[in-house]
Length: 258
Image (tube, rainbow, N blue to C red; front, side, top):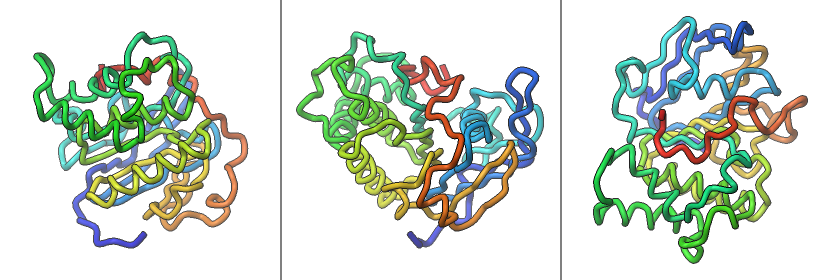
């Protein structure tokens, strides 16, 4: 999808290095996402994709390099309500005793650290639930949902904060076709409204028409930055697992970084 892009980056990663334990994972990664741009981060299992996005939101510290968000060094960035994050879906949250509305409402906490939800907050929560097609089930427990429906709740939670930047880690992994189509339509609407998006993807699938640029990682290094590689668009990358070993327990965190 070609569109007029604001040259100011919302994400700027320069020379990023990071390790998990003693194992180097990122080896000098450069990554830019500009305003209004949709960037797919692709690569085989172990290439560093999830570590890269977790570094961007501050969950994995860099051992070298620099990250800026909206022109501010990440360490000094405080306006996290501008960022929506959707982690990889795991089964860790399946038994949480909360309704869909309660989980989605937690996405407003980056805007309101305390106190009751305002009328605007409640309206934003209702809009987010409607966007993912779950209005009729808003009072249902998340424990009663299918995998695809649960993923839609996680995306609605991120959208509830009305972010300018949406970061999604494997949003289509393990999701049924009907939910994939709903998620693609939801993302299309956000992009049309000017939201910038960084997606970690196993394969492009129904999101391919939305992608402006693809960044491919291999062994923690960028090996491609440009139009989506045709082969990647048609086939899953080899050796890829859907669940990152460090993702367990993340989906129902109520704050972005807490």
